[in-house]
Length: 309
Length: 222
Image (cartoon, rainbow over all chains, first blue to last red; front, side):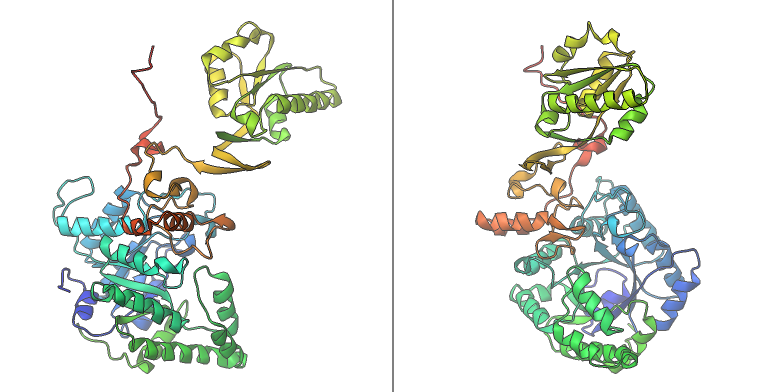
């Protein structure tokens, strides 16, 4: 896959090295120090940092401004963008704004429904869906045009990603859906958190059977469990999450104070096993409000030091 | 058809409490079928309001009338000669009927007695479900006859989103995921390969986005 953008993440992936990304959620207020602090904890252990976009529909400091803070620190942000809150004018405009700050990565998402957040009575937009957002960014970059057909002066050069959940229903369209995202323009994929490794391996086989692993860089998503309670919650309450009983049992078998350590162990073992799967090109470590553990996970998983580029 | 639901009587009373001669105007079309604003509902509401005003010791005249349609000049003309006997009309038609009545009888206040909900069908008696959002550009040919615009909570044209779980939507466990239904139907039709066609960005200008809409048919215009 040829390099098409100034993205550091793209360069690392194209070089064949395993990439490591992580993510940070912006604060619910104006204090940028909160995001800067999180970024400082992980910056030497990851190649790029995703900034979530009003995740679970809870209003926060915007992803774009947070990405700019990271960029000003000399880091490599991945702008997450959901189509829930913006029409095609705002989307294209924000893409230009991000690119003007040298933000070179974008993750295209549809976003959680607003009923989960603090503005349940608000409208959603969904002028585009995540697939059409992928097409939009690629069109702006590759054709140098706005959706309306006009030329863009200095088009945005962004490395374009999407999320994929290998565990969502219906299973039979999981690989076709990835194929669709690749056809729409996805160049990297960050997957949903993986706990059920066997099912993930099955999915990767379907992906390889279609040759998709050669068309898109797949970063396997992992999230360390903090407690048995969290494991149960993820298993039972989070849609599209597949946490096998053995994992829940393993967490519950430890005394409460040892559970965080066990969660980290499970995460590291998962990474070791995922490394062996053909087509896995890196890891997306989502340590939810537990960013301080990212360095340990990355080091113990043998993913440190990170490449200079 | 247009599905409507009765407004709470407290809200209706709040709107009409200062009037003395009220005509409750039903409609014999959609709102009759969905049991929100037909002759029967006009009778029930009239009785309830009469009782309310009696308890309040207020002398209020309440009459009942149900038209064939309130979205048609012809039928609305039927009350032309009697409308002056009333100081207000409480219309149990959909929002279209309420507005058409108000446009026609410019100096008579018209109040809605129902909430107009959506375009739908009767799933079973007492249960009505949405099936269309009148986006103005039907895509059912490519989605197995199941509409993601009206039936997906995100109107996603290339679904399902990550919130689809065991065939249900992330917003409500009792709500079918439209994209699960589309995939099941494409499979039943032997057309699952069509799933991989990307639906292009939609022209929403025929939807609400384009402003109030109008259909003009020169061939049937008089």
